[in-house]
Length: 134
Image (spheres, one colour):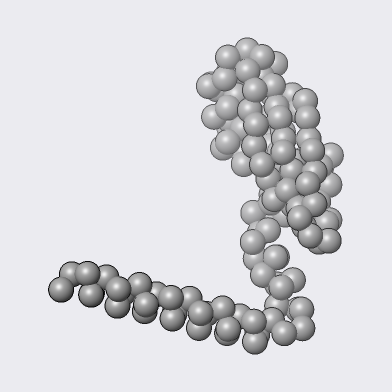
């Protein structure tokens, strides 16, 4: 995320917008867990719940300051208000979602059923492709 903001701050014209979607869990705090950049100002953040425990945020940032190449490392280092804690919340969303899913009753059975269904479909597609090649 720090790289995304850095590229946007470097590339956007003044008053240009960066719009991105970021997944977030229930414990996500947009005030401290969204990345920041001195050249960009957050103008909009909208949360869309997808489940009780997670959702996604649409974030809009506007370029408000000139980018200084000599400050690039400082920009990236200061992207997360809470440092590694905030970065981890964003980076590990997929793993955290999987952990939550595994805690639900019936997860193992459902997982095995879906895997078998995918395998069967793949085999059918392979057989169909072999038929069309002969």
